[in-house]
Length: 134
View 1: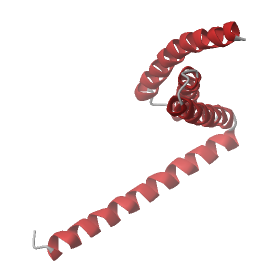
View 2: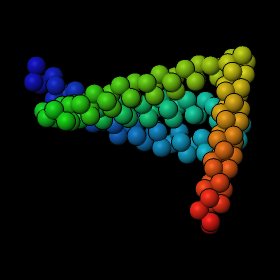
View 3: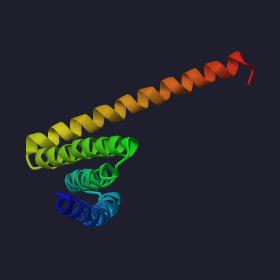
């Protein structure tokens, strides 16, 4: 059993390096892409590979026999799995015309909400400035 756990840690370490490299490559490609469909696919790949990175880091962290690192490892594993699943779902949705419409609508909604939150924050800031005489 001990040999198997050491093999798991070694595999996770190698996987961490590969997935971290893949995350960086995908993120760089995402930044430079202008086509919405390709950019969305690259975003999904970036989320998936970053999730894999976190899961590998979680395996390594959880193997350290202290309660704190085991908890951190568990959190990294769960967070990584969620990000991997989200990225995979994003890539899957991006494959169909209907899925791309859903993605585009969601992006537009978040942009509108972000703009409204920014405007509200600006109004609150202006109100506080006038209240305190700035």
